[in-house]
Image (cartoon, rainbow, N blue to C red):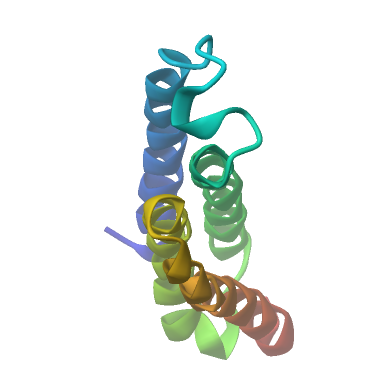
Length: 126
């Protein structure tokens, strides 16, 4: 599987996981006090994780398109794993932080991975 296909796979997996996690949470959204209510930390973090599946999927779609249209530049070997790490880390950290608040301090990990991939793409050219 080439790099574009890998990122398409991760992108569609993110869309599927976004749908599944949204459907799972949707089973309980009618209960006003589910996970402490709409504004509770637990519920906000799970919603953030759910939406990050979609958001990061779009980053992977964009990268696959960039790689398909043009070379990803000299940093392609770094960009790809950083985007995939972000796709795993962001919803993972959201879910962990939802139930163990001190783990919110892990949020720099997916942000650094995603921002690093984007910065390298811009810096290295495409």
